[in-house]
Length: 315
Image (tube, rainbow, N blue to C red; front, top):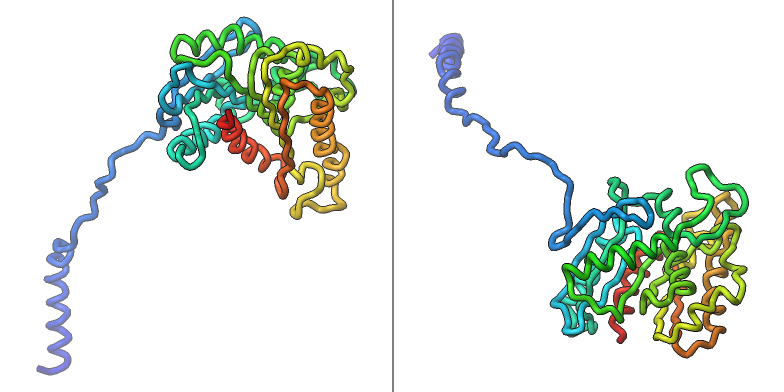
């Protein structure tokens, strides 16, 4: 066959075979069904929205019952900043209990207290709920309250939240804990000093001792009277991160952030408060402290939550 005939034959073959080749190709059809994205929820957790007559605010309460309730009822741990910290505390309690033979874990009822606004951290609300009823000093931002409402918030827990929990769970009224970080740590510390009848365990993580121009550093001795008069055993764990005062390797040692950390003196102030509690020499008060090496304010929160859950297993 001549070359020109071969090329012509090939062109004709390609022309007539092209439709057949196209028909032979599998048609790509998506088998994936249409999906609808929804807000995620934590498996096995329960929640309610709790309108409070005490504060006038509505709280999103999340609970996770970890393990079977003991005969005397669950020890309850109230986790502040629930939107952000409840998942960590719940996962820790659940995982520890799955390996109870290794770590002595016990059943717990984990209760997260948050706000029903879709935010992980509601700064204006926590600034109001978590701070003591002291008149504000110095310049206060318009978004922050002039005076804290910690007592109203604690009333909400005692008079509104706990009765709701008792309707659903068997809880141990003699054993309960509060776990708070930063402003939440301030509230936990305030509850220890002024409302010691409410909880048996206090997990106080990096309390913002610089708040209100360091008012908590200059409390009169009388402020500790309720704690001294309450003779029930109080177990306290207070922690702070090394890099809440010294600049971390990621911070310019001569920059603005380093100056802010040095001015707040978080480590010194937290440890000074721990020393003041120790100096009360109250036999019913057991305090342990830890400074987390290499941790910032953020990292200290997670360390304190994990260690705080384990702290509850010491009984």
